Image (cartoon, rainbow, N blue to C red; front, top):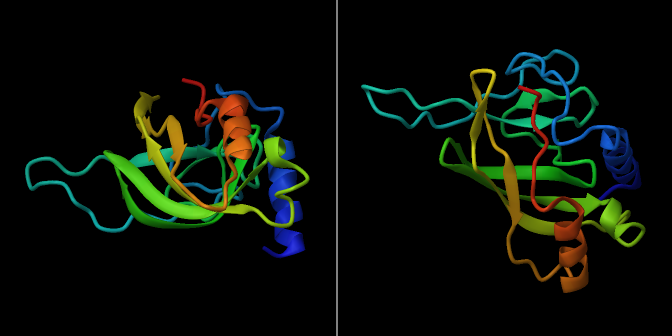
Length: 166
């Protein structure tokens, strides 16, 4: 990871420190930190009789007030945990799977310049103000993430994603 990106990731985690699991009012789904359109999920799925539900993750990366996001490259998952350089392999109402660089306040300074490359899954969608948001994340097995760091991460936020106030 480049030092500038690491500093930006640490700043995003620090900026999110004022946020709680309740977050704040979320801008309309599909708008990113500067009001730009968030990427649409690929695929489509669903059936002819019932279209696939749109599902979002509440993200405060680059905007501490947060916004509805889909398949983000960078995700501030909680006030303690951030993912960068995410690559998604699946995204839908049943869950999202990908891989990215994990860091957080619980692993500083060790992970500042060398984050942990890990698989991540977003789960447990819930409806908030009529929109579906993932509420939990889980980090899969990775040789890069030491057991003591995994425990510290789990103790920090319990795998709970931030979500908009509803």
